[in-house]
Length: 175
Image (tube, rainbow, N blue to C red; front, side):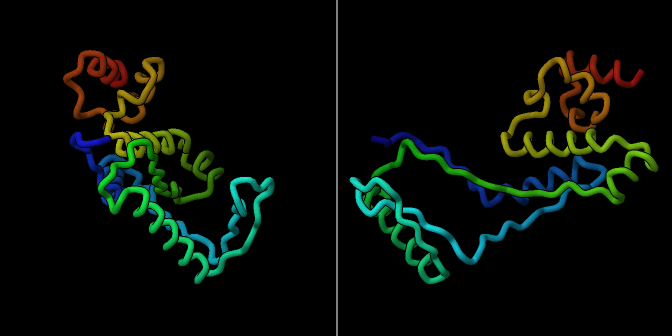
């Protein structure tokens, strides 16, 4: 059984935190929130019984979907005795979507502006990964690419300049 102190994370705050970090660290301001909308009709595959060999398939409309959601929460409530039992071996999957945009087409960005879009996407991805994992960007990179990333995105590492290795990387990038 549980009984120990549980670390809780409010994942509903993550989009706001992510927006703030992107606004602070991405000078291009190229990442925009993306809304994911579930379809109106869902397909349910379920076994008629434990001994069935094939799954039955049915289409669920809005009302049926609401009923299935209610059944799922009632089952969870019964299994946990209304929250009295801790679910120790469970996973929570959180999906957050964002779209990286450019002012021009990909070809125009490369040819007319002489900008490597991969570096911009790499910086945005590192900001997102750092925010989601709550780790500094430096801990997410292999040592073999650290100097290159620091050279093209020094702002991501500005608060860690005291670190000798990172300080040296920033100095070599400035030369």
